[in-house]
Length: 122
Image 1 (tube, rainbow, N blue to C red):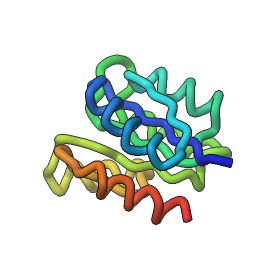
Image 2 (cartoon, rainbow, N blue to C red; image 1 turned 180 degrees about the vertical axis):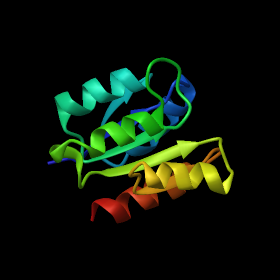
Image 3 (spheres, one colour; image 1 turned 60 degrees about the horizontal axis):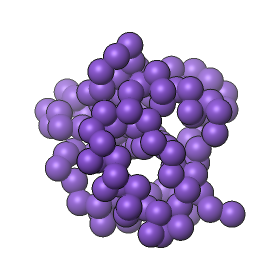
């Protein structure tokens, strides 16, 4: 059975890049364009791993989504990777404090992302 990955990013090009990279490896991909949609889809599909953009428009950003999911028993152990253009140490600390498993900085290498995902899911 293939692993489910939810990618939440308001930039369609980022979602497409991640989807193309991961689908080629046999992962099942679910895309969300904002935090509210990410929460809804996570609860509906129970992904094995989530990739959350930190800065998304709307009610919830990636940090909010991560923090909310970590309060729910079903998501306590799920791998959550934060993906952000915010590069300061404080930004990374905020993501990790919210419950992220790891924090990647944009621009990112799709190959490196794939390598990380495989390591976390094995």
